[in-house]
Image 1 (cartoon, rainbow, N blue to C red):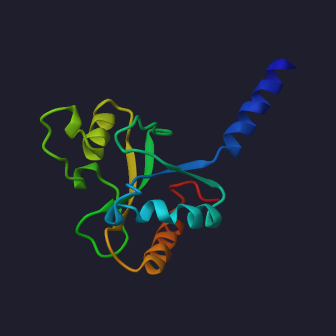
Image 2: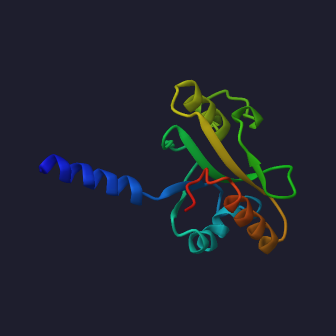
Length: 149
């Protein structure tokens, strides 16, 4: 009987657990803060997704060996989806201070902790309302890979 209750609790936790999308950016830099500014609207539009603002150099915790991220990307003009770690350029590293998101993702992949990545790339500049609309559309159309119900 106790075992059955534990199984039901575990099933309930799994079925009600929100999907997670990590948001990266710097609130102090205008060219790097759009993803952070979009968080309230995204939370309203997608209540079944947990949006977490996080430093890209902190420990990332892939769920089921997958990560979904919203981040500013240099050199694009519209919202882009990146699904291959090889598409991410990494900075030259001379010390741990040069460790960036790309290097972090490649390390997680090499350790077998990350198999699937979805990055919603946000341009550094553009009309905020248009970009937010594009981002919402891309999340909706991301073939349920971010757990949209």
